[in-house]
Image 1 (cartoon, one colour):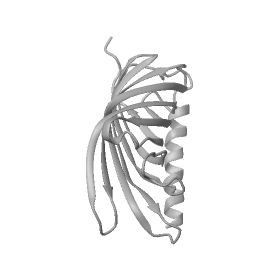
Image 2: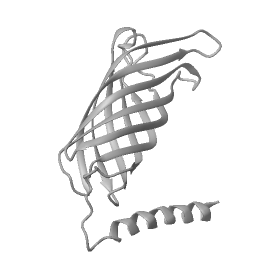
Image 3: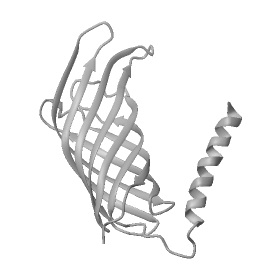
Image 4: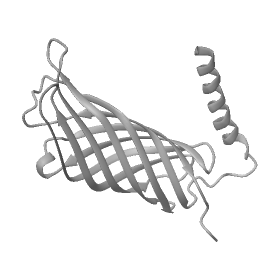
Length: 198
């Protein structure tokens, strides 16, 4: 199993390195226009307020999916779906006393500061958050509310169509979910589909 994992990791690294050096004679257009898809994992760190005791630390894991368009070399627009399985809160005995699962669906804009192989950016988003709040053997409830999102991240491109993304965001829900702020760190593979038509 370990050998297979190492072989798979070597294959992925080989593909990325090969893409990075395949066109040394011609500089790729890393900021070319076109649609893209992005898929990866997400780690959530709660900064909840309200009736959750501050000494109970909650962390969650999930996945992140996006589809968007690079409309200008310094600007893109995307739809994002993020799912955090659950923030599990444990007491001193290690028993889970409450679980809160969160989903967000947002429309985001990115502003890129650089357009080379490494592309840092700032992000703003607006959409809807859904929660699933439950206690073991007890009650459960769900709700939804508008959510705002702000973040920083960067893309690293191996070719003009394949890259990696790392991003930090802060979610700011409103209404009945206003106490469920959380931070998310995502890491993803990005695939760009097509060039802008000349």
